Length: 360
Ligand code: IPM
Ligand code: MG
Image (cartoon, rainbow, N blue to C red; front, side, top):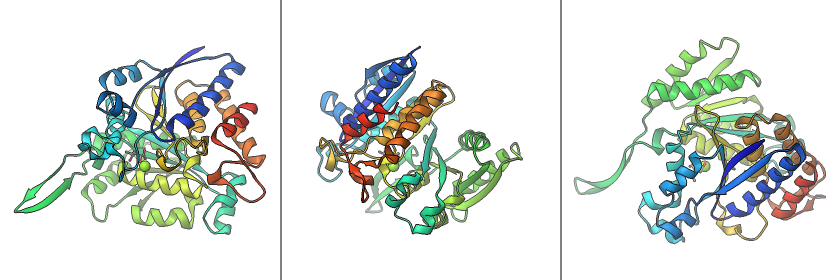
């Protein structure tokens, strides 16, 4: 079958890691008889350099015309790159936020799993790593602080900056439903994160999540304050199955969840709307310090491509093939620098891609 994939290499390590994911998809296509047709889409700093804006209307149209979008990463060094001298709405990240909003990608799934083989790369205490963990962060992606009203102005002679955290019950309900639905296919437990001891938005969050939970009597629900969640993630990550969270808390907790799995280079992600369409990207950033060196870890992007096969194209067998190939490579002791440990063989970005392709 033929599938149309929009491809956003982006900035920094983006083009290198996307290249490897495409290689893997091509190998899957060849083996299982699918045609993956890629259309390049500019977004982020590279789009600013070409068109003066991080995402053009044509780019959005191209994304909408695709069955799914595979993305690398966008942005540069926020202290030194000229992109960050531009007004905020012209900076690389604005392109990412715009594509999420324009395509209605409200559900961001970030699985974090500790591979047996990566226990040495896990920064947690040995007995915690030994217990392992397997969680899915369900992050709300088109609301909250990221999209609320913001401004900086002088108030009574004092410069003041305001960001607004707002959620309505519908936005909370639809992401909660996604979390409960997916929990039903996993270990049947949702831990919902909020700051209900301080924030109104969190109190509404908790109320709506409780209402949604009534429709899922077989799923256990626990509410956890975000500061406690940050602590529990390093203390006892095994307790988490589905972690339901608003946008900003999810941004922060997902980096933490990634790091405890060995490296941010391992964390894939899917951003979905109400249809089968999805934007698939690694959770990590553009890592400008290592860009162009062929040393970045492409596994998160490759696993994001596997999520694309599973969620958008319903190609479970093919997705399994990618995930198994990744596991085989790790078993064989093949590592990029970020997950390197004693006795393993260190490979480059493109070699990692080749090793995974060889096991498809
Ligand atoms: C992420 C990133 C983005 C976010 C940035 C690049 C805007 O950190 O996908 O987690 O904050 O959502
Ligand atoms: Mg982030």
